[in-house]
Length: 467
Image (cartoon, rainbow, N blue to C red; front, top):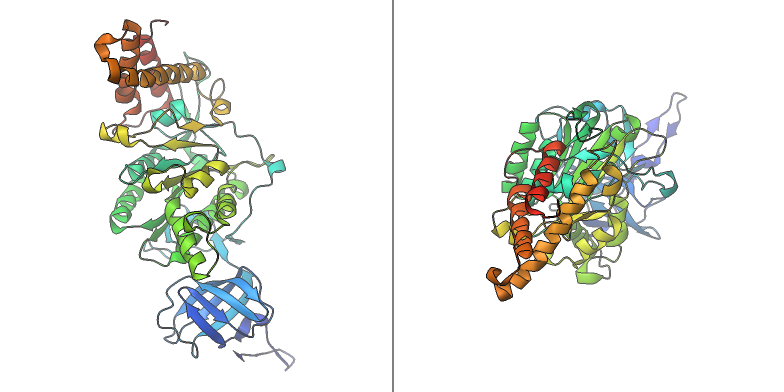
């Protein structure tokens, strides 16, 4: 262990704890290094690692056993050795730099700019781990966020402060749906009744924060083109699959720290979109394996539920404060299995789900949202008088009822054929097909809430003999 001293004005010398340089590494294991004879380290403490070739890497204290400390490096440990690698404990937590100048900027998973512009001057710094909102301080989510996607706005409405995940499968167009939400989401002041045709956009107080985890080069190119189209009104944290696995764990925390600052310090309404949480959980499993922890279900760490909850529960509204944090995490279900630990645990924590269907995708329906298993548990508080049109609730109930009946009749049709069915049953079958083609299917254009509800009402009147 070596250290440096600083001369005081009175001629004496002082030495802070953060200036100790430890050269007492005992082993290296993937992103983990073990440092011996450490004095007074703390769990979660930010660490600086100096490699023999002069590079400086960020790290974090994960575990302490007597005077031996396990440190996780945010980067590659190749080229390090046990004798010449130095470790400095900073006596502080990992912090995020915060300012309104961050809007319109793109960063990597360690919050370093990758858009070619210099780093902004922060107004304040805050720990990236943050903390979930106290349940007793939470305000009830009651205000509508328009995504521009009919099947979400009309049948699974997103509400400010809600956590509404998208459950996708390999090969389904989840990134195209994410791109549509990124470009088209906005706050609107809804009409008071059916005859009121005015909808006021409130974009000045709304921002989208995007966290992309474990991207391939193809996905990276796609999302960067989307962000170029947006130009402003967003903040992005992008982690590539080739970049350090620890950045995959940091990126959503940086994104949420910025979201909390914008929401609760600046009074803005923030929509956080995270894709893909499956890559996040795989990174968590990789780190857990390196730490030689006992695995849980499917090899994932047993604490994955609490780790996901620590991320998801940072969304919400706080009573008496302006601003809100709303979250749309994307989960790609391994092997199309909705009972897999990642979507299973996500469903326990969040307030509903948007489920993408391979069957609808094969019919060239975009977005291929399966209406029946999809659900927004807070929808009923975000629609109706004062939020959207008064008849929103009745329209969505009608569409759901008749579509569910038509879907159920498809099984009967497969047995007896359409010719053997009653006239009313045929109407319901035709309604289910029309809803998929004319309401759910939305290939390009953005649809406002008025257009969405008008389409739904026209469908219900055209096919339902009761109307």
